[in-house]
Image (tube, rainbow, N blue to C red; front, side):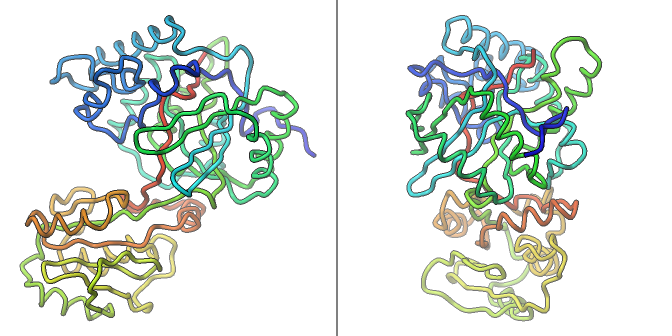
Length: 414
């Protein structure tokens, strides 16, 4: 087996973790899935919640700007307090960690490590999403203030039975941390401190062609910016790596990311359905339509549910254009409904599949939307094909579920 290069793709680190008896109180949803008001409500009565670190504006006035320097200072103070009270502690030696999430019958087991910023910048770690400067700035300020990366980036590695087996065999003992979140997701963490195991995992990852960011593009971009700003400083090189959890691609679960539109662009429902028949087979359905195959769509109007099947002749061959979210935009949203910029047009909204098809019906039945579209979930292989082509996924293409918890493992920048 080849030796690990001077700048390995992944490496162990001294994780910052909660003491086991406090892990359930510390663990929190990812910082970017909650509004300030939702975070404030969720953390009420729980001073140990990691939301006091990841969304520290909840400890300031309700009208506090989440990007005010006082918020980042408060986050650092809250983190220091958790460490000072020994709620959080730092591992004494470098480790790799195994992270398992179980939700119902779904289970996924991945590796927590730090990944090379150099590999990210050279596209060995591949991305598929545009980032917003303001959201990048927020994470840069957060990392700088805390001198730590506290939200892991969700990644996928291409199918590799040897890596899968190594993770499975190493996670048969009692976990170090075992938390069941209010969402019903079970989060388990194992700490692997054997240097020989570290070397084996590093070598196995070196032979993988690429890694793929699934969720966490702003965190990874911010980590790269922090690394560039600290380049050449004396001392530790921990800033050259960023916190990731890498799961096998076949275990990641992508849910549908559905759309609702406010109006039919001046068309009556019957006229709208007539226009759809130019490029789709349209079938009325008695039950809600949850598409299971690419090229299928559900549409809900006041008149009921309809199944759309696209004529394959209208689907382009390129990896981005062939995505269902692209097909819907190019064949329906833009030419029929006049929605040409889904990022900015206020007439469209997006609903994650975790909310169910009933949430689509409610939006239409309440009158807040004129039509709702259900989509087949994007496949992981399609996401990877887009990333391999150096292309960008359309907005709101993927909804990964379950979500990683913040606060269970953090990476201190020494």
